Amino acid sequence: MDKEKLKGVAIKEVDSRQDELRDLSLKIHSNPEQGFHEVQAAAWLTGYLEKNGFSVERGIYGLETAFRARYGSGRPAIALMAEYDSLPAVGHACGHNIISTSAAGAGVASKMAVDSLSGSVLVIGTPAEEIYGGKALMAERGAFSDLDIAMMVHPASYNVSAMEALACQTLQVEFFGRAAHAAAQPEAGINALEAMLLSFNAINSLRQHIRNRARIHGIITDGGKAANIVPDHSAGDFIVRAGDNEYLTDLKERVLDCFIGAATATGARLEYKWGDVCYSALRNNNTLIGLFNENMKTVGREMLPVIPGQSFGSTDMGNVSQLVPSIHPFIAITDVNVLIHSPQFAEAAASERAIEGLLDAAKALAMTVIDLLASPETVAKAKEEFTLGND
Ligand SMILES: [Zn+2]
Ligand SMILES: [Zn+2]
Image (tube, rainbow, N blue to C red; front, side, top):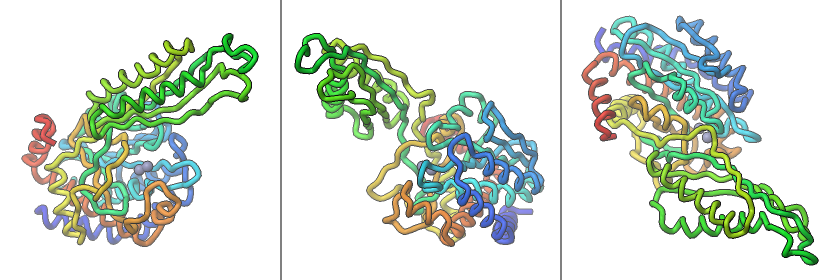
């Protein structure tokens, strides 16, 4: 069967499964589970894929709620990434129910193409995108080493083909001083809060002289216990972000120097801990974007190149994109004034417009899988772009 016929089959397949995909999405949405606790979502998704002929491995790479579902065994191996974690308090305000259901729908709709061409399609369940960077852990443990291409679609308020996502790492800082009566014997104290305030000032000075896309931001989580006691302890949480992984490494050192300098100035002792995972910057593969955009046109969506006037935070898909040619486009499921991570976006992620978005995303992903399975040259082109670093 030729490529266009296979695409037609995939579109019909998604349409004929729209009720079950809607149910799956709404079920995940109404049972929000946070990172590494996505037990039900993982069970529903793997159950659906298994029922539809995928061979499923659960609890992979030491992560209970991670999974890999595979159909076919050959190369190229095209992966559709599924996220299904929610946020504290606001549920599915990032719409990860749409990501996972569109990946599952696209996987099932690609089966006929796998049967008639060569290669395999995988749906990879990647937990804890929001806080712990599940894909970063999985990447370190080799979960993506045998893939040729990785794709996912994230809901948003725009149809956008590429994402700008920064490399980032969290930093926890504590200063230890010496308590004393703040008026009677201040000379006996070492002020841990002053060390924290000096650190903020040093970072503010540093911020004037860093690259445009870099970000440093933080909060104080302990600033002392009483105004008449010299604080003997202070603590803060920070995030350092940069446009690429190399600059993040440089910037982390300079940020750390701000804390070290403040410790020296005040005499407080510094303890710090970088987050276990480092989110990598996202590389968007233009060859894949070109295919995906054309397929989105088929379902009636015109993709913008970037989100107007806005850049994004960070995603653990960045870590996948450093290993294998990847895309992370966005699909509009709501109006442009609805902000991601807000209660309004959580509501939008269960709307009829979100269902339309997930069906269109599933179709476009499946059609892109077909483009790739049908053309080894296109896979080679995406890989060449990746290797040359032209993306
Ligand atoms: Zn999010
Ligand atoms: Zn998200």
